[in-house]
Image (cartoon, rainbow, N blue to C red):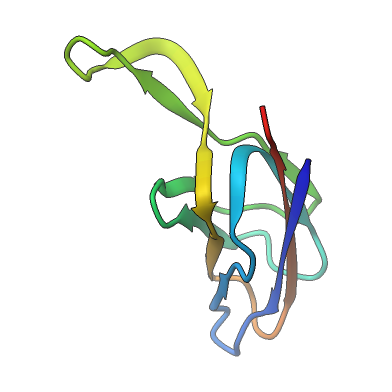
Length: 118
């Protein structure tokens, strides 16, 4: 199991961009938001180099949260998505990033991502 922590403080306009400092290889299991003092209207976008957009959460709320990001699996025959088949995101030596909008003026945010090898 690997733990990646992303922390930062929004600017006066409520904007924050946090780039991961450690690359990780493994499956993204969950992302925890440790609510401190941001507004409940904060919009979050989690991304990585190869996966692109992983989780987009509008109005993240004013309590601690846990998200389990998943991607729809694709058929090998034509590339279309399977119905109701979700897969964990796999990171291959990638960094997790988060962008925050409308996070409130000068507020602290902390995210913890948990990865597994299997």
